Amino acid sequence: MGEYLSVTELNTYIKQIFDAEDLLHRICVVGEVSGFSIRGFHAYFTLKDENSQLRCCLFNYAKTYVPKDGELILVGGSIDYYLKGGYISFNASVIEPYGKGLMAAKLEELKKRLEKEGYFSEEHKKELPRFVKRAAVITSRDGAVIKDIIKTVRKCNYFTDIDYFDVKVQGIGSADTIVKTLKKVDLLGYDIIIIARGGGSMEDLMGFNEERLVYAIYAANTPIVSAVGHETDYTLCDFVADVRVPTPTAAGELIAYDIDEIKERIGYKISRALGDIKGKYQICKNAFSVDAKRMISGMQMRQSEAMRDIKSLLKDLRVALQHKNEGYVKRVGELIRVLDAVNPTKILEKGFVKISNSSGKFVDGISSLSQGDNVYIEAKDGRAKAEILEVIKENDYGKEIR
Image (cartoon, rainbow, N blue to C red):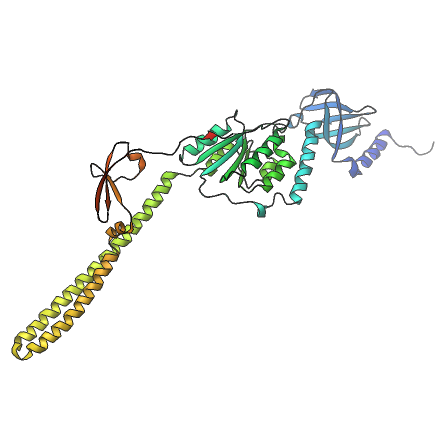
């Protein structure tokens, strides 16, 4: 028979062929699991379809999805020729359920297309208002989402008006109800719209991956915040929204503003303005004092000179004093006008009034008044006594709008 090869030589040659073929590496195969078994840290099974089967091994099986016999799965890995045993084996590196893997692949394909068409571009995204007066939340009334958002905002203030609109947030028809509600709410003049739901599986969140929802968010005129799922969850709603936050609670933190902090800032600015007025007043006062001293000194000097020769210089002295006095009067008048311009009481002449209670304490807000209280109103031309007939305060709670 001539020259011959040993079994090892032949198997080695076959293995080299398999190892060199790129098409047999980093591939994905779909099939049904059969004979799944675990030995130590590794798993072994057969992947089959109606016409053939493929032996597979999965090293360190705990790092990926563990299937059951009869389950249809996607397996990623490479073909290997086992030299010692002389057989082909598929070395699996990752396993996914067929439905989930197909869903993820289709979703990724849709995401890339929408991104290419510009629906996720930063240039199109709208800025959120600094202070949100009216906020709309599109979510399910049955979940904890709306309660978390309202609770978070109310920790900071009771001025932001929060309305919520009940929608279906998972399952068949969820995207339709969200799109329909979003289009309606977009016409109601809210400062911001929050689309929110809690976390869930990929299947639970699929309503927020619908193409028609992307179109509706992109076309909306109101700034939209996406607060769907948990921090690690991403949907197409997140990518097209003007702002994405990791949780519904984070959405509440985003729109909340601390009213006490704002009051402190206003108070600080008023204090600075009053400080500036006092400073200018003191400067004018000092200048007036210096000029007055100079004027008195000048008068005394001239009086002394006049006394030495009062008879001969009386006429000239009178003329000089009259001239000087006119200048002093003019200067004093100018100084008085400067002082008058920075006088805080001038504020009353602009139409503002001060309100104090019966004890003479300044009233700084509606919350310090009650029905039946007697108050004094002070204006530029006098005071008036009045009685409080009604105290009207803002509503502290959100309400549902149907």
